[in-house]
Image 1: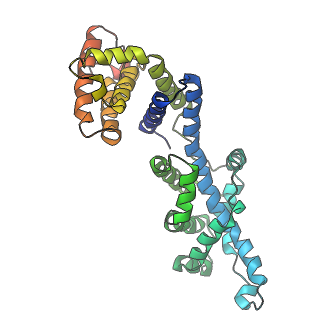
Image 2: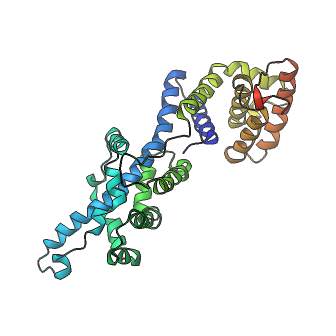
Image 3: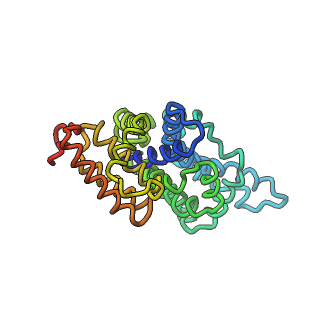
Length: 316
């Protein structure tokens, strides 16, 4: 699921896009931000759906084998154990999963070559042969073969990865989150009652986290000129053209958090944006941003502009 750092990254990406856009409509870009966040959930459901449809491809494969000109005994009596995989069946019976599949209009069978490529690799694996030969039909055992399909076949299939990259523009950034959500789904599906198993939510508390990321995005942009002047006052010895756009955005977001989010400790805010600068800006950005934010923080504290509560007191 998405944590606060992931949400800051999402806001950062869309604020950067807003700065480059010709039409700077905040409400429109805020909707784009929330859609980009929802795409992580869509990626997660798409992956679960792919796993389910691989099991369902067993029936398609069995029909094809029966239509062979000279079918052998194995073709005439195919082992369709995977078709009845308990984990996959529980997913298809889960109301939340069914609702999301319909919402995102997911249908991997619209291009069965993807499913076929996975299934061909699966049939050739020792793990699948072992799965078919054992009489164990428990939920835990059914999850083991699904984990194998997910980790060893799907994530290593170049065509499948390309399909996800084509559909989800932030695949490289979000794929680890999606993989973690799928892994937690395997862990959390412990009941054979489909109504007792829960999918992984987009965040631990979306009502609070959704408001945080939307407010961070909107407040940063609405106060763009104000935060720019705050930065400019502390960078008089720097030509504005020499300051990277990404550095400026990171500092504006940090100022926004310090001024508008009383429950987030200042130290947490500064450390978060310094970490993001290491990943998304220049090698020297971390030191530069740290120095400027330190000056800004000192001045804001003198002006008593920062109000923090509880464990987020400035002095902490």
